[in-house]
Length: 379
Image (cartoon, rainbow, N blue to C red; front, side, top):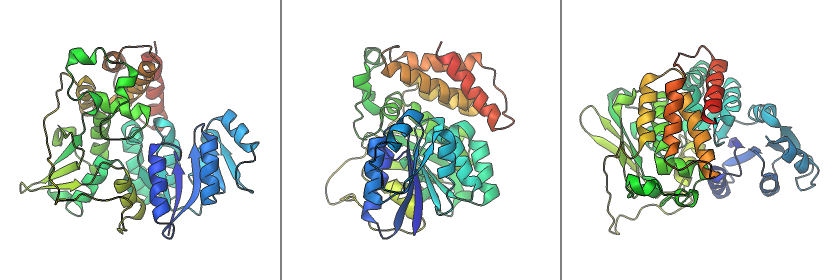
C-alpha cells in the first residue's frame, strides 16, 4: 500500500494525482495534503478521502480554514513552511509527491528525504535550485527520487537497468503556444495568448514557461542531476504532438522512446506504484488509427530562455538557481502586465550577468543566491 503525502494538492498535478488515486483506492492511501492558499478545495479533498493531516502555507488562509468547520472532525492543521516540513515527514507516509510550483517545496522535500521517504518530484525548480544537495541526501539515506515530469519519467522508463550504455538523452517539447510564431509575432503577445498551451492543461506559470521553452531549459538542468549526464549529452527537439515524451539513445545507436497520450496521469501513476504497473486511468494510444509524429530542432534565436538555460547548466554553481529565480520573477511580472513577453529572457540574462557565479557551499548559500536573483530581477 502506497501511503502518500501530496504537496500541491489543489494544482494541476494534484488534480491528476487524485484521478489516479480514485482509480486505485485499494492500492494507495492519501495520508496528508498541502496547498498554498486554496483551502476550500483542500477541504473538499480532505472530506472525499478522509484525510486528517492538512497543511496550508499561507497563514491567513490557514486561519480561515481552521475556523470554517468544513474539514473532517479531528483534522490536524500544519501552517507555514514549518507546517509543510512537518507534514512531509509524517511517520505513516512512505511516498511524498512534491507538486508545488516554484522553490517552496525544496525544504519539505529535503526533510522528507532525511526522514527516509521516497519522493516523486514534479517541481522542476527543486533539482534546478539544489540538485547537488537533493541527490546527495537521497544517496545518503538510500531513498528513491522518482521523476514525475512526463519527460524525465519517460527517460527513467527508457533507461531501465542500462544506464551505463546511455549515449544521449533526447527531451521532447511541445513548443508551447508560440511554436509557429515568428519573433516579431511573439513581441506582440499578451498573457492570455501565452496561457493557451495546445496540448497540456497546466498552471499559469508552467504554461508561460512552455511558451518560452524556459520549462525545457529547467528540465534540461534537472535531467543532468537525475541521470548524471552533462548538458552536452542532452538534446532537445520540438515534437508538436506530445506523444513521444522523451527518448534515450544508447551507445550502439539504438533509440528507445516512451509514448503515451498527453496526460499527466501516465507518469504520475508510474511513480505512485513503481516498480509495479497497474491498469491505467485513461485510454492509451490506438496504433490502428493513423497519426503522425513530427520532430524538429528548436530555434535558439527565438527561444532565448532555452539558450540561457543551457549556458547556466554549463556554468554550474549558482547559475541554474539564478536562472530559475529570475525566470519566476519575470513570468510573474509578465502575467501581471508589468513587462512585455520578450523581456522575460532579458531579465534572466541581466541577472546571470550581474550576479557572479560561485560554487555553493551549502543549501543556505543556494537560497541566498535565489533571494539575490529575485531582488535584482524585480528592480
